[in-house]
Length: 298
Image (cartoon, rainbow, N blue to C red; front, side, top):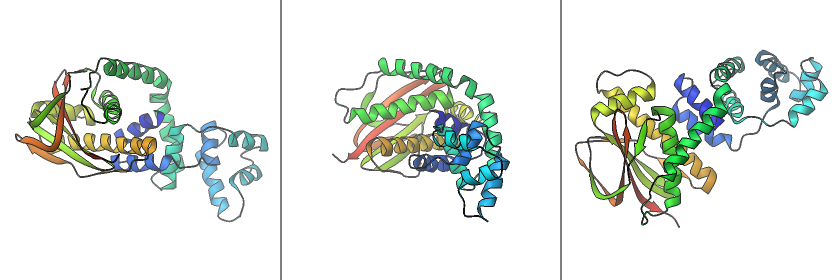
């Protein structure tokens, strides 16, 4: 959860793109903590001191901890302590950003300070409040008995509710899922996800609703429906499906691949298999979420 909060923080500041965040989350599960990142997190070294050690390592074949002691930045006791320390997920994300030359150490240090001052004080409270809200939504939620692979759908909806709360707002309620052979659309963004669990997902809403949805998502006031509103809807769906694909890879070893989003306007959305429509009622309008399973490997 800390990773997602910090990832969203970086997205909102324009530091990384949704595609970069998804790729970094994939890498994070196999990444190893580094002593320099641990030292910054513990407050034992500044980013400039860590960078100084990195530069010195290019001239001497010595480990980071050994050089840090020789340069007077760390004691042996501190090195031993750091080696046993658990690194928060968001710091590991920052480490990957440095390794990929997306950020310099000093830039990460400043972003961490800004993130912690703006969010970290309230992190636990926010997490508990959001978890309670999503748990209540799911407790009151009814899944059709004939819904195939309901555990995957429930996992998808849990992430969807969390992302709606996080990006759009908590002022929504859900109606029951409806099974429809064809779904009439207003302005609809759909995306096919391929792989061992292949499905189509879509967001459909009236243009006036889309304007407010996009305004909340990018934290910018749109006055009318335009290509930026459409692009914002695409971005939300693409980011959400990307995060879900990472979860499925980590939790079920399923590799999913996202196709480019498609646009449908005032047409019937037909799929080869059953389509499920979930109306989500916000204070500014109704967002219709559409889901259809195309294929799954048993």
